[in-house]
Image 1 (spheres, helix red, strand yellow):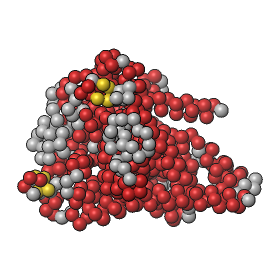
Image 2 (spheres, one colour; image 1 turned 180 degrees about the vertical axis):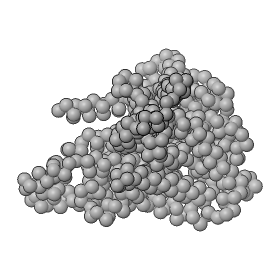
Image 3 (cartoon, chains in turn yellow, purple; image 1 turned 30 degrees about the vertical axis):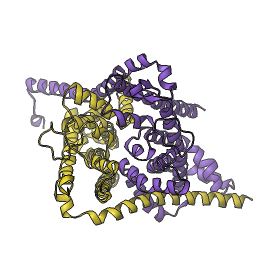
Image 4 (cartoon, chains in turn purple, red; image 1 turned 30 degrees about the horizontal axis):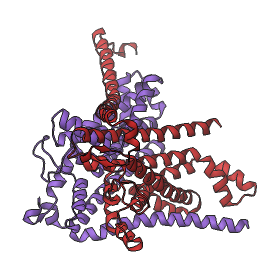
Length: 278
Length: 298
């Protein structure tokens, strides 16, 4: 009897594992297999003008990169410095608990509410309109928790003996921070940055309502633009050329999965450096 | 050797002291930015949403079954129901499959296989949700039409897509939790004569409960907040669903679909929808918090 139950349980585990892997593999293979034939230099290097039979995504790639860049410029310094405060300076108590609670809560807010907020606050209230700036500010708040948490974790993995050693040698707290702690934590911070790049690229709802849908490369931070994810959403929603949609989805998957792999790789190097003999 | 010690001038010492103070304040201000951002978002949402709640009436708003902005009827009960069914349905399916897959990877599967699958699933966690929606529209929706007829865009399609979407999170977080269970637990159980499966389900899994619950709550949060993927497959009809094959419109979809052209009370009603959505997320998190704390005490 026990043997039968055991076998049933074992089969359920294998079955579910199989379903999980198969499901995800099917999605990937289905999209990529249909997308790859449509990807060529012309698709990547021309503008998107469906009326003129031009359906390239050059401008959209440029728009996406600009959005990611501007978001990081805003979010990374604030996030990293905030994490330094939380990990190295703040004493346990109400202040730290409050900050940590707020960071956790920010991470729990769904992206459509970021979109709703960004649209009303940045686009309408501050009159930035649908623009690169509105979207970058909104996205910066959205990725702040990612950056803060991963940076904090990276700082925690730096052994206390490093800090004590540096302080014992007479270095000030600031010197210790910049010469000893941060250099050790840099791979972790890098992987946080890469992760948030992926997050920004994959975001649709918040971008749709803050950057607008203009399929042109932005000429300034005040111009409306379109990210790859929003482009894909619009193509699918309008049911236009599905070839373009598959190709865009493939490029999006490749970039985001590539960024995630890079983040994992960088993070792994960090743990090897800190645990392996060094 | 004493002569070698460089004496710093008092001025320079003071400068460093001030510098330390200033940088510390800068660090603090950056951390305070997170607090500020959260407060501004919440205050803004409530300021915009409360007038509508007052005008329509909270009770009428959350129990009304008709959403007809042109006729000034704002009832979001069908959307609340849609959100909850889609969220819990997908969390149950995705959560169960994900948990079993995690147990398989952590306890049963041969090492080389687990080492291949684990990073793959981690990578998949990053696939943008709109890709899931796209896949749903191209594959799942036609499949549902073929099997059951109807419009295809339905609660069922939404649940399937959300289940797939939360799988990677669920697998990866619960596997970490299961792996964190001390080896001694397993050895003790096996030494008492329990089989491998008995050990997994009666000893390891209960010991990893809080981590697994945490993964489940994160999955719930992801499912209830998902918007664009859901819009593509849900059908977006704002009436009360009567079967799993009916088109539905979850709260997130309601906001996203109408925000661009809404004005006046209609726009305020969308913010109010956001407020209700936020309340549900808070309730989910508080419940999880309480359950987790009880587990720790018990």
